[in-house]
Length: 87
Ligand code: FES
Image (cartoon, rainbow, N blue to C red; front, side):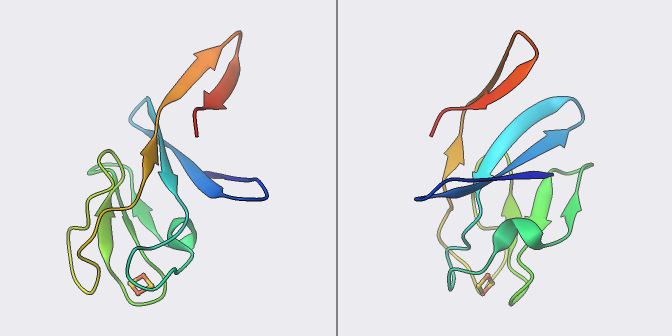
């Protein structure tokens, strides 16, 4: 996982079995630093380090409580060897 930070937004970029994915680094439960949590490249999920909610990195959907709302995901593309995230 590579964390990309701008003034307005923090996004985690993941390589899930060769597929590049980007998800907002802000848990929908209580604004926890989602992308600092452990992630599983096999099922492409991440667990929030604050209270343990699990999210699908592809869709942003919350898979377990205490979160129940999705987080934002963003398209990722590679141009001339540079990884770009459309936020
Ligand atoms: S802030 Fe992420 S589960 Fe509570």
